[in-house]
Image (tube, rainbow, N blue to C red; front, side, top):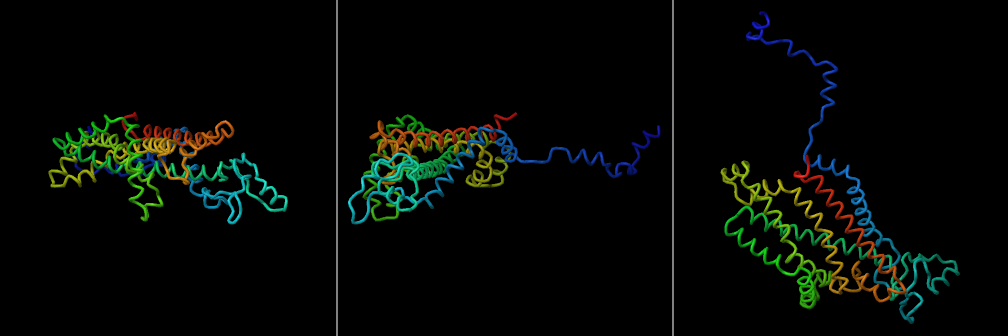
Length: 354
């Protein structure tokens, strides 16, 4: 009876304000701390050993491509057998790995130290290792910047199409369907060949001439053809989010469409966008490699992994390692980026997590 009266009483129960015991404090401390979606995704990504190994391989290759040319004694365009005022020294041509030319052997006999050619030299006496490293830098840079171009165009077009709907969405999607219907590889080769001839005279004497018409044409090709996949992905995400309560509340409050897209819609589908961008980079690198292999890539003497593989075909029977080395580097980069992209998808895609 006393307990029932105590429950109906308006007096404060002082027992509820007794300090917590050590056991209760320890229980609260051991409870799972608050976290965020990004932190959870990073923790899941760290547990994926294949993705983490791929990530470190990408980082190591990128750092090597950036820093090795800074202190390497040979330049990618330097013909070692060509000396001012002297005839061409053919002993520098087609050296095997760790092999020295006759001139370098004479210098070694005189007590000089000569830096070895780790991968030998090519048919023009250029150090092959630094050309592979520089070609890796070019391929990574083209893949990264091409993916940024695809990302920007795809997000803008996809978000406008998904948010506006109606006639705007229908027109944009029909354009996307037309681009999808074009033969991909044929259009890339044709555009690369046409733009290569048109851009050359146009950029002569400008700062863009140092980049080269072929690389600029690659960026234009990606801007024209490769944004459709990203735009479809973003459009699908926007269509599923634009009817959410917070979007309707923002529109009711008078927010503009561009503000709603920037502040609400794109941040809520950023994980899917990042994953798709990570998977787009290896596709861009592969496209640049096979265009360079066909002679439509970077301008000579600037190397790329694809152009190095193409040049190696001339001496395939005598120097097969010249084809094997860039092929292995391309395969390692593309495979690592694909595996890391799969790891990002497994870690950050909410539909794949229980």
